[in-house]
Image (cartoon, rainbow, N blue to C red; front, side, top):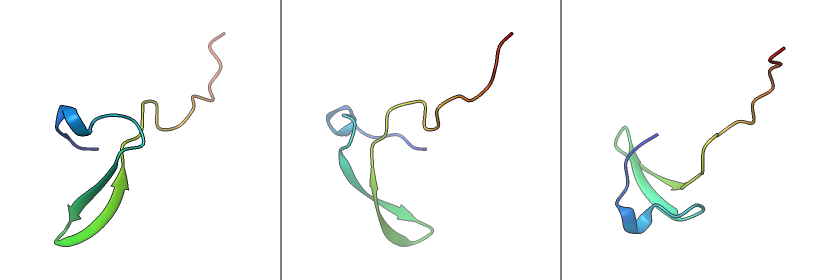
Amino acid sequence: MGYVATGHAAPDTPLGVDLRGKPVAARVTPLPFVPPRYFRG
């Protein structure tokens, strides 16, 4: 999770990030990252 400029915040926008000193490809993903699978009863 991280912050990006507003111009790059659209879903599925490809980004390049620096992860512990190594360049890694990433993309913007809308929330929630994982669909909820719980029961509220």
